Length: 223
Image (cartoon, rainbow, N blue to C red; front, side, top):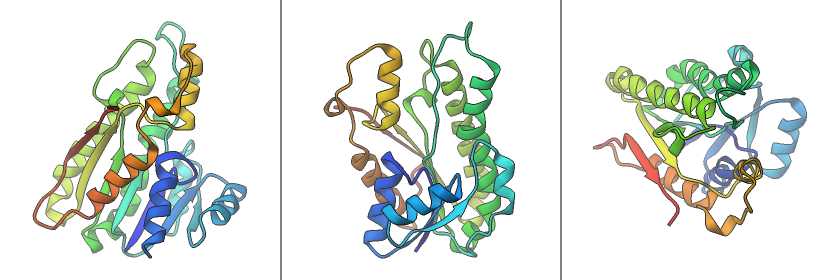
């Protein structure tokens, strides 16, 4: 099986890439620069890399993607918190570009390969994609948009055999979560939150779903 991943350099995406490589699958990872591609190749033996910056979705247009893809997993994301009264235009734009526009563009480019394999698109969303709390306006807007993208895509691609799953992890023990805690002025203890490995394991389950069903939405919350 062949998988295309964003966000394979850390957190959920990294653990998912390791699991897929360990079982003998082909993993193609998007890296934002040649340097980052070299780092991924070293840390994830066997991975193939393509260079494009998700902050510039237009850079995705030149990618040479595989002819067949069993999955496309959107795991990359950025967050910048703040009240609507203070968030700058760049804060809104950067989060919308990486969290929403880039997944939409990459999905469009990958659809021929996904259709050929009757593959699965997995969009790693967030609890913020379902409920927007104070100071989460821009990030939540990008994730609410990602849900809309998934729902529309699911209806459009059903006829082609492409399945679409949104995964909504609650707070997960990643570097991003540590940054969020710092912004909130709270102490951070990774043991309080979902492990990235748990979310990656859930995604592997989504990818292994039999042909008789589709899993539209999957929510995980810290216990």
